[in-house]
Length: 381
Length: 131
Image (cartoon, rainbow over all chains, first blue to last red; front, side, top):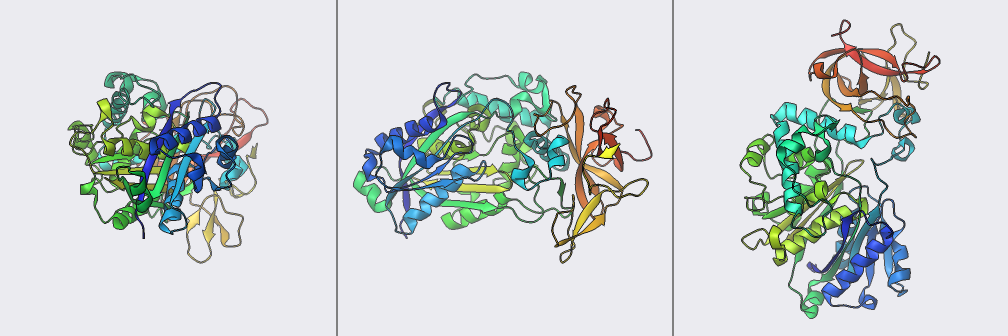
């Protein structure tokens, strides 16, 4: 089986870009990625594209060129980006193609996501009574986790503080101003225990990643950034997901547990080998819980990790080096690919003020979405 | 006042929530799915607080059908021992008095406290009355 390499990356800055559609932001990212790879559009053989609210990605061909390529649309909640990358990887591993891309973009209205019960196989009363709100799930999940594992609200604040500090150096990030820990902790609560700085916002943006077989990558003369694993998995029994009118008394694992374990097995490495990680942080506690769910530490160790700065850019395991979802916002279709974009930047040594020192060789990304899907990728230089 | 939907509560006094029990695995869920795989299963009325958060902004309408006036409310997950963990409002307890592990019992509250012809939703309150 051929190794899959990432040979080109492109990103449209995240945040708010009035007057530019989500699809146009995706096209911008594709063109940038083509330029980065040094190839022309007609060479591209296939694409997988994710968008939750900004139209069907395959319609991009009208802007990019009607070459007749295979272009498959992916809709997997917040894990759409990771899912399209996993699919694109398989298309090359199978030997069917040797040059294609994964793209994601989105453009959400302001305010919380506006989900409807019927889309999630739930009765109408659930929404009428005020439960169709993702922030409730996030608040309740971390509240239980803090109770069981001794995590303080200060640690939640430290995660958000780090995100905004890292994003100062990321040109594609939305919120690039540092925010003091006290300001974060004393801000109005949105869903307890989270203040407004501890939640990310729906946003806009686009990301494209060009994938090639190893043979093709060598022909292009690009530095070999290998996609060692790309695993997308769904939830096991006893997991706790968004929009849950009830959850099982017998507690179980998570989609992330499964995707992470499979990705490490496929890549043939362990958590101790990872030198930089992008973990889904739609809210501050998610980064904390995902550190453990992905196997980087045991439950409860995060309190000391954060106090000691282990997840800082200069720490033992730098996490969310571009500010993550907290600072970049979340355009659903693009978000998981932004994480991989950032990892490629880090492995190339192009991170500038946010570059992880010591020339990292192994990078990890993880994205989680409703109603219980996770995607993990592992890159090696 | 009527319930917000059919099939949520039993006709008992006081009422119980109607869950669903999977005929083969015995797994109990709430509400009862519209599926022959599940049989209606009246849930116990007592439980303990498993986790919670506070809804501090008015949800968007649709789908929210509550009043325009907004006051924060607590959303809880209540463990009914041996059955399931149910998502529900908390009632008759101050937001700063909510504690994981506290004993709770089922009650019903109006979705809109000021409506004369409103609907009832399920909630839990401190066992034995107000905290």
